[in-house]
Image (cartoon, rainbow, N blue to C red; front, top):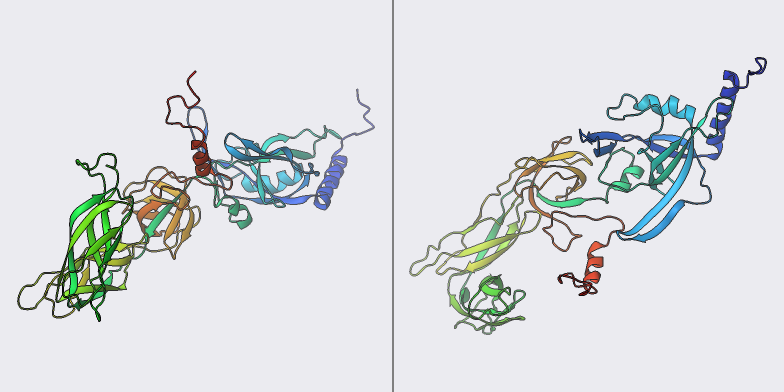
Length: 473
């Protein structure tokens, strides 16, 4: 039986020890941020966490117990690439947590446990600009001095991001997650405005090119060359458009190669008295065409306003000629960039018999919407598909939207509406600069991954097209 005349654990003694510890942590510790995990979605049967969020961060002083450097295995080369496996141990005041952080988080939904630090919560470590995950909380060390414990020892491991939502409104923390994980880059189109252009009429100009032989074996569009115009004239300029997957008796061994489908006119030239010759220069062979010239030909079309909001190249209409005699109405096609702006007009037939510059008319853009500014981490929803994602970044100049946590596949032409900002822009095409296939919807990248280069180098060592790439046993 204990001696009743010696308290060995009175409230005053315990309070003194706690105060001394708190003061030592303020003197010799560092300020870290504590990020409680919010369990947003769980599976109902086994309670597996599907989605976690970190929306709050609280500064608190902590003593760095691993003062001589990070613990763990450090930087290693694993089968998943280069990994950093660093550990740290931090000591925080029990009283400071229970009187400061606990009251602030106890009413936040889906916190699960607010009375003490819990495994799975995050610690932002400012010196290395790194985020660590709490793997174990030791609450009985030192062991019941004066019948009480005064600190929590947090054993932490470098956090491995798995598409958790981190939005603390503290830039130094949130920036750690702005460019990692599964990210898809979406090219949006802005406010819909109709494009405009002007034309000019030329005499002795190339009005059309008729392909007489598509050729074969091309891997890209060949360069088109017209013979020079007479002195005082202007040589025509054209570009080839290609077609693939044609199978005939000449396609043995190269059915996947491209062939010349047509030649569009960029500039019809000027002053030809006889039809010029045409030649194709590329890695294929056999392409040939016949050139036709005429007077009163639409010679060149100049864009005065590229418009905006186009999800596909708009239809171009050229007014019919009003001259007397044989007349042919000119035709043209447009091209747009990823932002939905008309960047070029190619003449498919320059027409014949124009006596004045015809009016050029463009189809109006399908989308007339494009408003607001997307906010970081807000949810965007496809107006047609109902697919959702989280905003990573938004560039209002290029109309490029980066998203993560995607629940499916967005549809080109649908509007993506922000839940917080109400911003709404139409999706033109999903693409990514960091992938070889610009149409790949599974765009993944991070700080250390080099998957495509690794795969390419591996393919030069092991042929995985074989049934047994490691040899026949």
